[in-house]
Image (cartoon, rainbow, N blue to C red; front, side):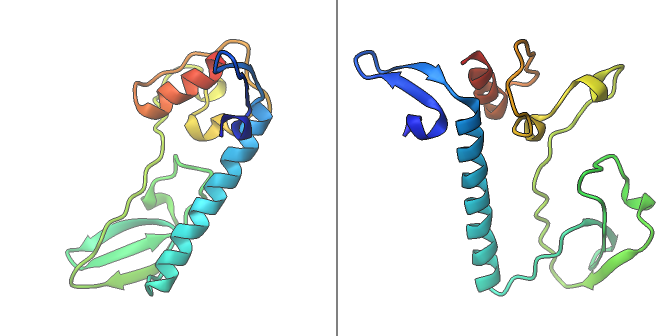
Length: 146
């Protein structure tokens, strides 16, 4: 399967001899789109209503969901003008998902990208530093080293 992800291997050595980032990016994007569709259809078929936004608890049984621009992760819920939905239930499931956290510091926001931004690149940089020790950081370090 490596060839579908941009790696061209020498059959005799079983090692990648060339790497095409554009092919990896295209295959990864198609896979993520497919996977998101599978999850979305599964939830819809189970009767789950999907509400996108940021939420805060008002009390033990009430949540307010705020509409927040997905591209601006620095917005606090308090900065949102009004809730788009107020939901009350005896039991509330919190499915937070996850997003990379960009630390504060001089030049960080101007010169760094997170793992989501990595696949927005059209070409790989000649020099990069990977900060992190999770599996995503290790995988991206491997791609950058290719």
